[in-house]
Amino acid sequence: MNLARIKERLTLYERLMRLDKPIGTLLLLWPTLWALWIASDGRPEWMMIWIFSLGTLLMRSAGCVMNDLADRNFDAHVKRTKDRPLAAALVSVKEALWLAAVLTLAAFCLVLVLNWLTIALSFVALGLAGTYPFTKRFLAMPQAYLGVAFGFGIPMAFAAVGDDVPALAWWLLLANIFWAIAYDTEYAMVDRDDDINIGIKTAAITLGRFDVAGVMLCYAAMLAVLALIGRSLDFGVFYFLGLGAAGLLMLYHYALIRERRREACFKAFLHNNWVGAAIFAGIVANYPWR
Image (tube, rainbow, N blue to C red; front, top):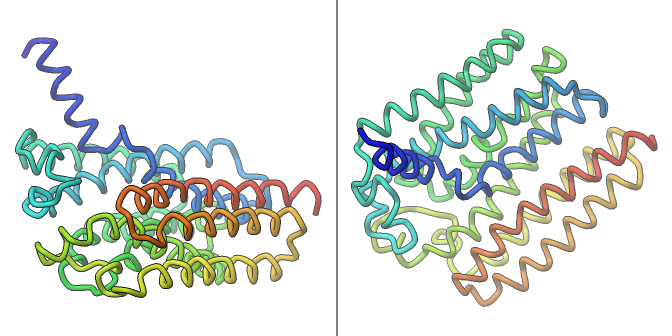
């Protein structure tokens, strides 16, 4: 195989792993970082940050490959996804299976340096990542399942830091579920017409004309849960300023999605990176001033 051929395959694998579209990794990483900072009382070990950050990238990449394997016959009929490597038959199923296996194994090797509880939870995380793509066939709101899958770094972070998963971790996961329903509904609003035609279930279809209201209610529920967490931990003003900044960003998202235009809905989805970042900034700034 010549150099040009190798470069071509690597580019296709990069697209299959969505390395050219980092938003998914960021939406996975922010709640994991929230959990690491809170679990370690604002002083996480740098090695722990590195392990979870790289592990998030690897598992998100593996999840994208698994998702495209499951959806390859659907993606070919959706305008936004028809050119994905598997849907366009540019990468074989065998290649994709090997890629997913290598990425998963690499992520598991990272977890092996952590405690047994975290290792056990990693199997749950793998199960969630592997089964999520199929929930779009039968769940009316698969975005809730996505919220669990995308947020499972939260209990893993608490387990890694304290060898325990307290109730606080599950409340933080609940906030992430509301967030995922909100941003992934915005994402689903982009593909609604195509999804209806091919029989895929999404929150945007289930909510119908109440989709915008549903997104905003989920945003509000997320902020309410995070506010309760802040009060229970006696967090200070910087934490709540972070929540306030996130709330203002959510109002901007409302302005984007209220007319349900594809491009604007997709922009709102991408902009959720800044919601996660604002909340993280509030958490980090909170600790030195407590």
